[in-house]
Length: 215
Image 1 (cartoon, rainbow, N blue to C red):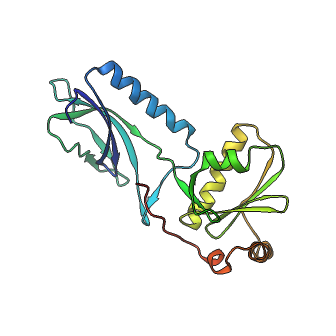
Image 2 (tube, rainbow, N blue to C red):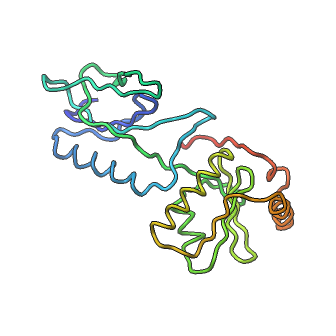
């Protein structure tokens, strides 16, 4: 790090990525504020990686001066944890939780997409959609057309539906019926209809999946 001010992404209290460096506080603060505001648009964020909980934070660092302070964060057990800046010449001026957009895999295309993109492609038009889950799969049904997405776990699939529901309510969009709890009969129907349109039944029965991290 060479700038007087640096915007850094932390992952589980350790430096993960340098976003940008600046010589002036004004420019650094402007981008930091912009990045924090971007979190408002993230509908579905990363909360686990490789089966482990993960937390992201974004920070504005300043080259050390007499007014700089060492920043501590409180963990889930109430302990004060010093953040690892990984450079003794810098200290933290501002820090906030950061929502890193999660991606889920389109089963048919094998592409991983952010939820905002999925909403735009599959839900935004006026026709009524039925969105439900089957194990760790998300199903978007538009009449007799089925789009299938695979999340990391059953927990993430449930969280996806909750977040989507909150988003649709906030936007006053009423073209989407979200079914969070499927009865055994409904699950049996979904296994049958999805396998009939070409989705592998063994894949449908799986409850977790591991995707490669984005490069």
